[in-house]
Amino acid sequence: MLASAEVLQSVYLETDLDGKRFAQLFWNRTFQFPSRNLTIGPYGTRVVDVVFSRLNITSGGIEENWRYGATRKTIVATSTRAASWPWTGGAPPLDHPPCGYRGELCSATTRAFAAEVPAVVAAMALTALVCSICCYLKRLKADSSAGWWLICDEHLVTAVLPKSTKLDLSFS
Image (tube, rainbow, N blue to C red; front, side, top):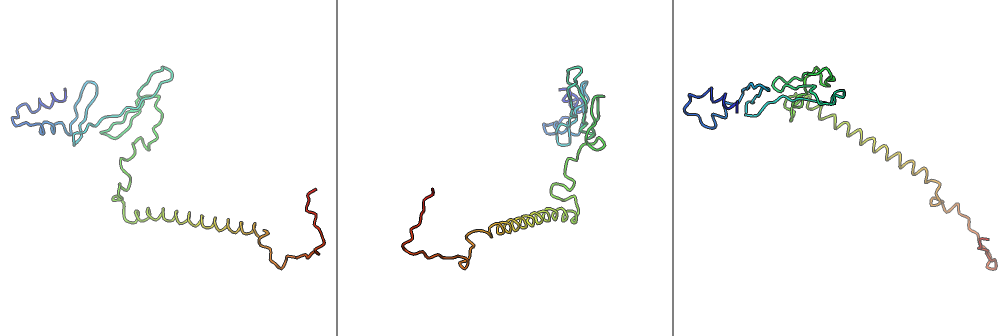
């Protein structure tokens, strides 16, 4: 309401003010209110500060510890109880990847190197898998070399018993 009043006060003499022009008067503007400032971005989006709060164990209440200024892109400790912020130099991380979402911000050599690394890692993994399978098969063959199915017929001895001989096949 206060922002609308401020905009209307700045253009009260304009006679050809339509809805689109009225909305555009809010863009790229900061409105100062008693509680806090309100910034409207270049496309009509609201740019707000973010407040990080946490529990104060001694008082039992929630208190503000950090404030991220969206327009300045900085984070400031607002309490002595605020721990150090993990970002480098107190600055937030980039809002886009270093090489862009499609690699358009890096040179061709950097992009080529970034594409080669996964290929090399995949080749090394495939080589390790093939070596593991070969070692397993070699060990399996070594363990099975003493199996009864590998006995040559030259090593077999046949016994011919006379027909009158009775075999005792009981297990007593």
